[in-house]
Amino acid sequence: MSETRVPTEKKVSLRILERAQDIAADIWDSCANPAHVIYNPFLSHAFFVAVEESGSACTQTGWTPHHLCLEDEDENMVAILPLYLKSHSQGEYIFDHNWADAFYRAGGNYFPKLLSAVPFSPVTGRRFLTSSAQPDIARQQMQLLAQGANQLLEKYELSSLHINFLPENEWRDLGADGFLQRMDQQFHWHNEGFKNFGEFLDTLSSRKRKNLRKEREKALDNGIEIEWAMGDNLKDHHWDGFYEFYLDTGNRKWGTPYLTRDFFERLNKTLADHTLLILAKREGRYIAGALNLIGGDTLYGRNWGCLEDHPCLHFEVCYYQAIDFAIAHGLKHVEAGAQGAHKIARGYVPQPTYSAHQILHPGLRDAVKTYLESERQYVENDIEILNNMTPFKNSTSEL
Image (tube, rainbow, N blue to C red):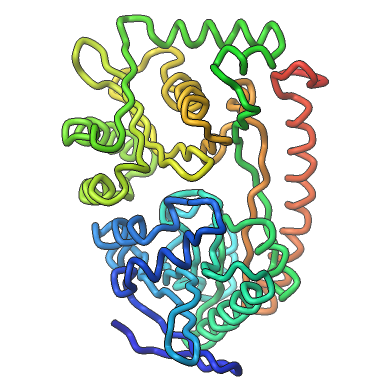
């Protein structure tokens, strides 16, 4: 455990802890998921411990935990900013590779940098974790954590601090405090109180409704069956099958999959009640699957993989089955992860995502600031256009 402390002007202190495991689970969770906020499994102590202790997010993989903790004058932990020292930009889903390349060509060292994010997952959630339900106190604690993180940049002579996939209110507050603001988009499905998938289909235009029905029928050709596994029903053979899919996808797309088999084992032991595997089986063998985590009002779709290619099976397992599950369990949203404009035709609509960036070098900061101003305008315009291309009856056009 590190006892490094960062000085503050208030009667509080900031301490850096080198593992989530060094923080008691009840203290972490009281800050991450207090009673007044909607539960997010990606912010839980169990998730961070699983991803770190499994060797997925660790120094050897370029993710050195450096969690910044705010303590009151009695040394009670009252807020946390999860942080990592990064030696690369992999597994973040907010892409700054061009910034790093430009700084390197100019003679600067972009890495290591400081990052606040959920490792390997483009999931929006609070980054400044505080148990306080009072906005003024939460805002003050956020400012103290942000100031402490800025001090770490200077202390360690780092190029930059990045806070990814934070909620809009935190993004706006950081912008007011001098952080550079970036926008992107994802595609989410929203439950309008549907009783079943058919009611959702009724909100679509006739042509899109027919297309979705055909896709669902085609996906289950060749005797394919769908299975939901969650909670106590999650067994080793489910995870063995899914991990084979995960490795296949990772090896084809990225070269090295991020998450270890031990991560999924730990997930099963500590977050099984918030975990859903949607699996496709043919002739008694699992051939495809998708990992989802279950929040207080949202189903978070994460990793997908397959061993056999079948028409529309990806749509069925990742999108339509997720909608079925959300409706059956009264969840308000399905958050289907990064990228993928093809999701619009399946009823998922564009949703802005936010990140905030602090860059110390004046020249790089000015260049990035100019770029982000243009990029934000592009993203806003793109979202407006895409919102008019959804499959719903009231859309002005269709994809």
